[in-house]
Image (tube, rainbow, N blue to C red):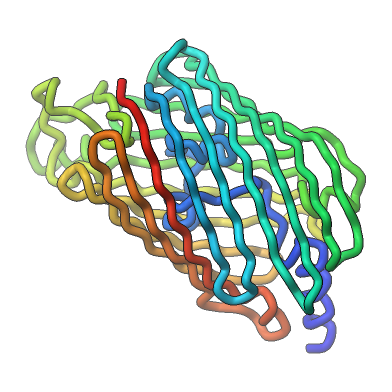
Length: 327
């Protein structure tokens, strides 16, 4: 038991009061889906999760996110802009600030990210890359960091509702003390939109080419296409491998569900599991999407924390305000 407690303290210290993440920010939608987002990353926070998702929505977009951990008083703020409308090359720019305090010692982190992505085959296959600068003042672990790194991702959508994503995170080699904040990782993901499948089973005609509007809602009405009773219901699953934990390569597995009701109210739920700590988290979220504007709110809660890892208990609340100009 004492050994587990010591390990928990080490994990907290190295991760800046939380386990180190491959990506630098988790937005409201991704959090609600249990962070199962890499195959359906279409909002501005695709900058962090899978930059290849940026071209899927043709728009100008401005987003602001605020994330607060109600247990350890960790706060994050994020502002991002994306232009995927001016040219086929989508460009996103984001800034994230994180502050946390443990035993009256403060950790501050600033991250600036530039992401670019290009649709090799529009609406079917895209490649993207994110280039980041990260500055960390970590009084808890007693180290400081100035680092540049990069992510590379791909995303493919298969007619009939399937999508797959793969991302390599933090691909620039760093010192071991720095990799605690920016770990070399790889993520793999798949998702299925049950609308086309339900049309085949229950009636209606499946669509193979419906485009999403600026808010990310499938827009099939102009095509006169029926999609079935499960239109707007998407299931997703992600597998993340962190190559630089204290125990070698370890995994995080997550799954999510998103159902867009009335083409304007997304309801979300998700589950997240970490192999290192055997921690489980459940999450829920709700949003509203209207022309030119959207709001998201989500909550993630630890539901199973092993003895000795109580410091990793989480209750995270996230808000997002989004504005966009459509295609």
